[in-house]
Image (tube, rainbow, N blue to C red; front, side, top):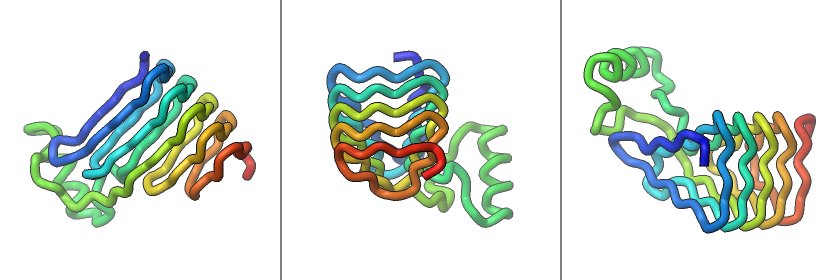
Length: 133
């Protein structure tokens, strides 16, 4: 595994099944209490982003305050009002280089997510998602 996994200080959860690969430069970030669940045999290529969170508050004043707090003391232990929603990735999924998996989606077993695709909605099992979908 060569990617970067991050659970935010206030909350988050990442579960990864057996025989998975996370490529170099990939990020898996969680601030949701249910978090990110990745099934077995999943291949995550390089440069993939799987995030169950916006990472920052939508309100500009709260976002600035959070940024200052991170610079000064690290990620806050209290939830700063970040939107999050669980991500579930089924078994034997292949996620191509540079793809982005957004918060709140479920990807069914054996789906293939092509390079540079952005997944904003649920994907059924055995589906192919192209970057221009």
